[in-house]
Image (tube, rainbow, N blue to C red; front, side, top):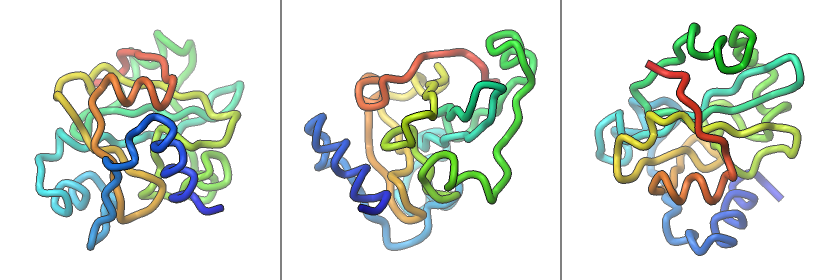
Length: 153
C-alpha cells in the first residue's frame, strides 16, 4: 500500500475522503501548493519534520509561519533538529514535499501549532508531491490526534 492510499484510508475513517485533492501540478512547497490550489500561502498547512532525543516528530503549522527557537526550546526542553532530506521518508513514511500530519509511521509524534487555527480551514499535503486535503482545525485535530502547541512566529 502506498502513502496516498494510507492517507485516503485515514480520511475515509473520519468521513473526509471527499476532501482529498489530486493536483495537476506540484504542491511540494508552500508556494507551489498555494498556486496549485488557488489560495494564499497562509491557507497551506506545512508539516515540519524534526528529530528529538526520543524520536521523530512532525509539527503542522500555517504555511507562512516559522519555528520560534525560543518557544520550541521552552516547550520541548531541547533545540529543534530538522530531519536530513535522506531521513524524511524513512522516519515519517512520507516523501519530502508530501509529508502530512497523518498516516505516519507509528513512532512519529504529532503536534499542531496554534497558527493553523488562524484560518477556518487549510490544506495540508496528503502523502505525495501533488495532492492536498482541505480540513478545518477541528478536523485536523481529529484525524491526527495531535497535541496543540505554540512554537511558531
